[in-house]
Structure formats: structure tokens, C-alpha cells
Image (cartoon, rainbow, N blue to C red; front, side, top):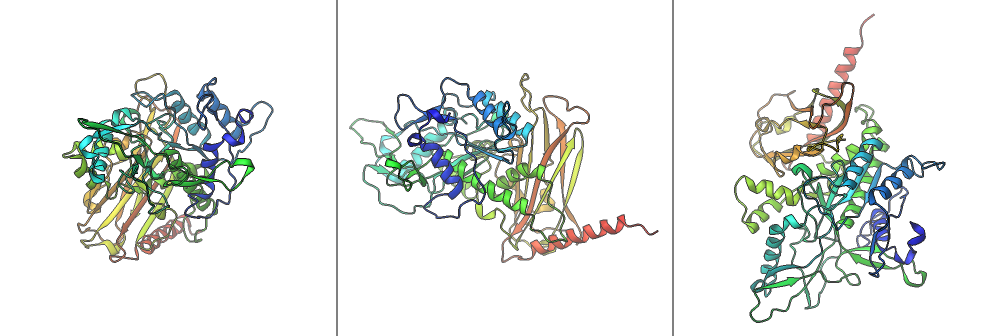
Length: 528
């Protein structure tokens, strides 16, 4: 596609590469230390200067299929261009087809590619940038306009569905939050900020995914968006609000841009779910570096085999996500009550906002266990998380988080899309001394990424040596999984509490795992 895509028109690709390599330029983070392979799949729009589109005379499924095969397998007599690639960033969305009930063709392709080539696809949920309306009497006050904009987004959620290929079951789909690194700025009277800080962005697509699964999977910084301040005429009941242009002055994420006359230092400010996806891809690269470096103590168990790394990275990214304060604020602002409120919020929030500070960082008040395996039909794998003694009989805040990711085999001819399912049983809330929070308990099992949080302040009753069991199981879904076939999965389990409650959880869990490993080793040594 490069011959039809001059450098001066490569705005989107340049911005995404900039975010993946450098992050938000305003923050000045360190660049990645691994190469990024770029393959253009867009070209300049024929009638809209400054806009780019998927090649109009080619099927997107064919373009993507050939692009991925060239990367990992090669094409014709050409060898693979970048066979070491394990994570693929797709910051695109097909504007003409929001998810309705069935998986899109390009979503099916991504599911097959992820399963066949063991790849992690990080995909944007998509943007809906059309004008929306708010009551005219809310247009005179910023706080009232924020509330009205939020309620309009909730009421029109069916019209803002996930855009392909973000509907893919085996992909990590990313939404955007209203945040960036620019800080406070002065804005003219013609625009206003009507999105709550760090809240899900109004322009972002919302779920649910296919079969009412959790989509988008998580949210990350997409850049703040300002909106034009409407002029209210006498007798008007509603007014239209549209996005303002802020590329030159911000706010937004600061990215590299094609410069005039060959300049190499041009930057602009942008926003969108594509931006958030690129930043999540950057975090995914950091996690791959940690897994591949294997800087563990010799006494600790080895990390899972590299074949599980794409799934582990996907699980770790979701594991570091939560609703936080979003639930209470949205329940109040949207007037949501009862059991159905959690289902409605799951469609809006997915698994919540990614907290990068929880990725790969050691914390004395948190212990994280990771595992990978392959499971067959009607099998159960049980993992035992040692309960830290410092949590025993303490009525203090604590949290258990469990995340499971698997490569779901899919079928195309049946009503149900997922061929088989892997899941972990409902956590023992009594043993954990807490209650389930965040995503609705039925929705978390409908995709290929299950993420559950149990937290509370009830005291835990156990004796030294007790464990918190996690049971991973495999069952048929749309089809019968054939004998001898297995499904690859990755599991992440963590326990944490406040630092003032205990700062020894990490060491306590590690010591018990080392003791368990030594006991197993002694059991394998038989006297002659």
C-alpha cells in the first residue's frame, strides 16, 4: 500500500507509531528498546483531505490476512518479514458496521489468526464522533452539560456499538478515558470540557460484545476532547454539541506528525480509542520484556513457557484494570439501581481502567502468581494460592483478583460462536472475606477473558498452610471439543491489602511457594 500512501499523508500511522515507541510526548517517557514493524493498510481519502481510509477496492479481511501472513509466515517465495512478532496493534475501526448481534467477518479473521499463530491483537473499540444533543437548559452550566452529555451517551449506547475488528473475541479491545499528560490549559469561550476527568470518553464505543461478552476489555488514556459550546436560540429545547478541533493547541496526547518541507520535529495533539490502543500496546511490550528477561530468584519456580506469553500479557493487562470510583459516580449520575445496574455498567465500562503502575512493579503488600497450561474437554486444573498469615483475623480492606485468558476456538456456521469455553469457578467469597465487585458475574464467562475481583473488610478465618483454591475448567460450548485437542490458557491470581495493614504479603506467599517446591523435590528423590 506504500506507493499510494505518501509520507505527508501518513498522519494516523505516524501518530500510532509515536505513541507505541514514545508514549505521550508530553510525559517524556523512555522509548521502547525493541523494533516496531509497520505495515500500512490505509491510504489517503480520495475526497477528504487529511483523512485516511481502508483501501476502498480491497476487502479489509483480505488486506489484514495477507499482512499478518507476510509478517509471521511469508508469502510466495518471500520469507516471513518479522517472525518474532507476538503483539499486533490495530488502531482502526470500520465506521460502517457497529456490532449488532453477530461477529463481523474481520472479527472472525482476527480470532482465527490469534488462535492459529498465537498472537496478541490489541484493537481499538472504535470512535463515534457524530454530534449529540443535550437539553437547551443544560447548555448554560458546565456541570449540567457534563451530566446531560453522560446521560445522552447512556441512552444512545445501542447506536455506539463496538466497531470491527474490535468485536473479535480473542483480541484485547481497548476503550479510551478522558485523560492525557498536558495538565490544565486555558480554553477559549467557544469550547468547553464536558467530560468528567479520567472518565470514559464520550467518543468511545461501548459494549457488550458478541453473545453479550465483556467489550471493551479495558480503558486507557485516549486524550481529552473538547466540544463546541452551542449557541442557544429562544424557543430551543435541545442543542447539538460536536467535537472541537484541538490538534494545534491541545488538549490531547502529543504525537509525532508529518512535517512540512521534510521537517522531522512536528507534533500535534490527538484523541481517540486508537491512541489508547497504542499506549496499551506499549505497555504490552514492557510486559513481554519482563517475561522474556526472566529475572527471577533461582529458588522460585520458572516462568511459564514462551508459548503462553501472549495470553499472559493479555491477562496481566486486564488484571491491572478495575472500575475504581467509576461505579458509584455512574450509579448516582445515571440513576441506576438494583441488580440490573451492574449489567448496564459492564457494557459501558468493561473491566475498567488500566493502571500502568500495577504492571510489573513489585509491591510488598501484594503477591501475584502467574501460570499457563493446556486443558482438554471436561478437565479441571486446580491452583492453590497460599493464604498469607498477615491477613488472618484482620477486619481490614483486602482484595483477591483472578484473571483467566484463553485462545477460544470458534465456529462460523452456528448460532453460538465460541466452540469451547475455559473458565474458573466462582471464587469462594466466604474464605476471601469479601464480595464480588465490578463486572457482572454472567458476562465475565461469555468471552475468552474472565476477570473477577473479590474485596472486603471481613476478617478471614484460616490456619497457617491453608490455600485459596482456583479451579480452571473446560467445557463444550457450540461444539464438542475433540478428544486429544487442548486449549491454551493463562492465569493470574493476586492478593493484596493496604500497606498499613501488611507489607509482608509478597514475602509470605513466596516463602510458602518455595517450601512447597522443596517438599515436592524431596518427594521425587527416592533412597537407593
